[in-house]
Length: 130
Image (cartoon, rainbow, N blue to C red; front, side, top):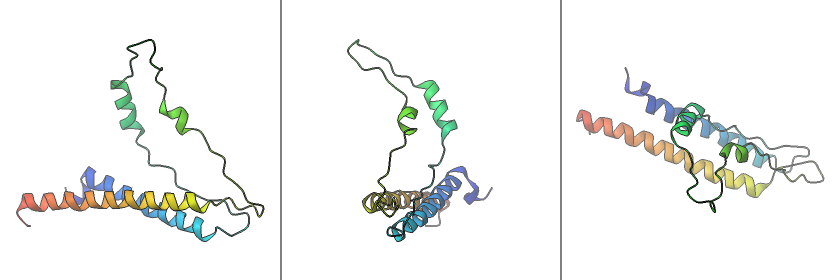
């Protein structure tokens, strides 16, 4: 099996490709900030439901005191949709929000790229090729 086909590398590659596509969409949103009737677009987050459901089965919240708040599901919060502000021309792009998404996306992409290159470096070191 080639090193590039290992699960960690394919996962990181998928993550970096997702961030690249999201960056393209966010840049399109910013570019169309003054276009009438334009609605911003974003990618759906990558799904890790299988891993999450396995973790949820093994970890549960316990109330050790009657004064503690009952634990809830994060799915209830994640499923909420927040209203966006629409200007009179019908454009719904909020530049501040878009720039925050761009910065966050850039940091996440850099983290994935760094993990990818460091993992390759570990393999090179293990093979004595560094």
